[in-house]
Amino acid sequence: MIWGVLLVASLFECVGATLLKASDGGRRGIPAVGCVIAMTISVGMLAVVTREIPVGTAYAVWTGIGAVGTVVIGVVMFGESGDRRRWASLGLIILGVALLRWSEV
Image (cartoon, rainbow, N blue to C red):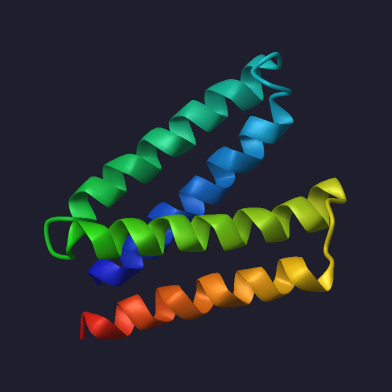
């Protein structure tokens, strides 16, 4: 259950980062407000998660999922680079997150 909460917190981080891009550096009000709301929810959920999962593991998983998700969104929605090195780097992040998760079982 708590790992599911961490996953949802990470997804809110992806939403917040995407809205940050859409806000044009904070110049567009609605996406900027949405970014603040999504990030607040994300950090609030992370705080709840750290009651049961060590903070180092929770934070690493949260940022890892957030980074991978945000890169995928950037490639798909914003036409950012999707070269092999970038995907290989994301694979390493995923591997690290998986190993941290399995270390907590």
